[in-house]
Image (cartoon, rainbow, N blue to C red; front, side, top):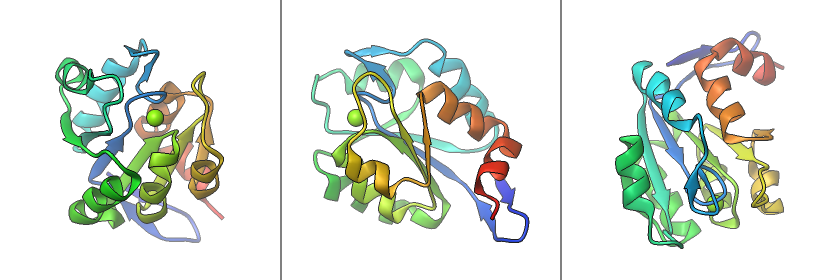
Length: 153
Ligand SMILES: [Mg+2]
């Protein structure tokens, strides 16, 4: 997926990295509307990964239900390392916790979600974009013009 940002650069996204708790799920349950949006993003050719410390022990169940790849990452440093191996210049990431701050720092496009479980201020400060919910985050990835409007200088 290519984003031609006017008066700026062209961003090519190949991978979407998602956090679990407080991002895809609230109180352990998948937020309604996530699945259909991830299907649309997959149709755009992006590989989708769930990177999680798996606090609740349900990461595999969620990854299977959403048909996305699961990589266990128990610390912020581990999430960052996974992104570095995937090529962070072509990665977008969505998350909310302190564990996402180092990941947000290295990826090309980082989106913080400010949902009911909160967003850590360190991750907020590392994020390129902050949105109220995961549905908003996925919608701007589906409608590239929304994203371009937010990113253009
Ligand atoms: Mg989280």
